[in-house]
Length: 170
Picture 1 (tube, rainbow, N blue to C red):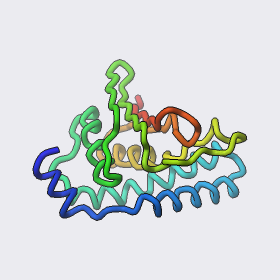
Picture 2 (picture 1 turned 180 degrees about the vertical axis):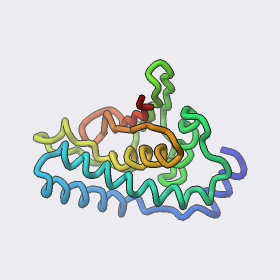
Picture 3 (picture 1 turned 90 degrees about the horizontal axis):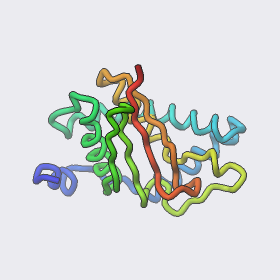
Picture 4 (picture 1 turned 30 degrees about the horizontal axis):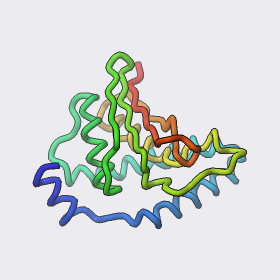
């Protein structure tokens, strides 16, 4: 991170309370699970909440960033910085897969679901950090890219990392 990013993080950026966010995430997901009656439907609903948040966050985040991703693969850097801006940590691994037209983001110590393990009966369907993917999808759409992001692994589901796959759609 350059000097500008360091100053933005330490002096300008408003921090979120990750414990409070985690509590809200769990409460929201549990409410959606009760309403939808199915983990996959609750996950889709939470993804849509992320999309709505993405539109608002782009407007806010645009004030803090001088330039936006012009090419699709530049989102690897943009989203890594945004993730750091909001959570205080970068992704552990970012993989660009041009032949599949996708960017993969992996976090092995995700602050968004840290310490949570879903009940066994829904564990394989839980994607607790899916709102991030809704945000990424909506920001891409607003920036003119036909792309979708989906969480394909989640530590809350027992996976080794939270994995978000952002893919261009034909």
